[in-house]
Amino acid sequence: MLPEVTFRGLAPSPSVVEAVWKKTKRLTDVAPQLGGCHVVIEAESRGQRRHPSFRVVVHLTGGTSATRRGARHATSSNVHVALRDAFDAARRQLETRSKHARGRGHAAELAMIH
View 1 (cartoon, rainbow, N blue to C red):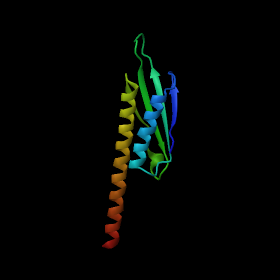
View 2 (cartoon, rainbow, N blue to C red):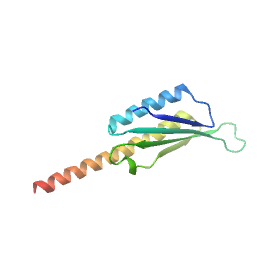
View 3 (cartoon, rainbow, N blue to C red):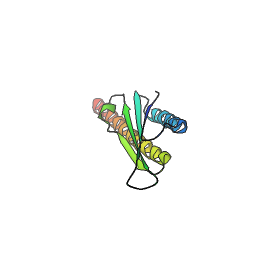
View 4 (cartoon, helix red, strand yellow):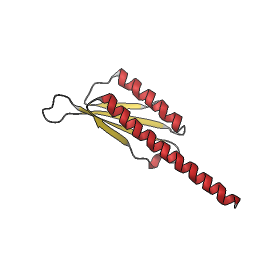
């Protein structure tokens, strides 16, 4: 799965795109059923502040429960920190859903046995 990366308010950066690809690969290790990933990286300037903050939003698609997942996002003054935080939140959500799905499957198996 190749992620789609959109930059808003800043120039596209090959190093940021490469970081997104690596982080997306790690997500597919957790949830191989993922069909797509769209990452929006936006520079937000606040007043006369010299350094903008960066907002990263991760939209995941594919799999049986992916359509119910909301977008994960993070904001930081460092784009790489915002990327890390947004992808960590997405990974935690995928792991939680995976654990719940395994739990439901196990409970259903137990009900069929008894």
